Image (cartoon, rainbow, N blue to C red; front, side, top):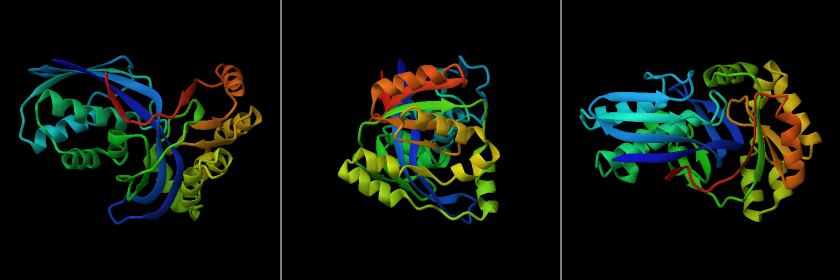
Length: 287
């Protein structure tokens, strides 16, 4: 039996960094949103563990969240099963788009089905939380208010958004960005509640006005290109532009599709990764 799953990327429409916790993680408040940029992963039962990927820089060991999810399930339920995994990578690495977390979420769902584990929703959420902070969101997807370290989720009614994603030629360590935040003395902009209110009204201009990311302040200080991309997107007609996660990907929100397409053509030769995307209401899709 073979299973193919589409694992959708995410953007942070808001990200408030509230405090550092005793366990080393940070208390956050964020509106997370699934988008149609996705990896595709094939899973097949096997006697041994085989992992293939069409992107040579994707790690194959425990540092890959797919393998972390695989080992978490095997260890938790004392299993000795093998698996063959083929990853077709479309979400860029170390980009703030939760590509690795989405792949891990797909792995949890796939192993549950292939190994007939009949996991409850609560068990899946516990495994996801153990694997990584963004994995619980990627398991559910859509539009969510995330709190804790990102694992506590509350449903929100989303609104369709047209986005242009731009990733400069940088790969940024999430851990380093949070360390720089801790040392910066910055206080959170605390924009999430205003954003949620705008979302409830369905007012696109107010939604765009309240998009923000605390971590952008430290990342853009170190990497000027973040501000350059934001400025370009606004000049080309975006209602708003913001960094997602710890970066370096920046997205612009457009309500004029012609301006969006024109901006795409203007920027695709300037930066290594530029793509048009839109919001979706799920984190995973079995193909």
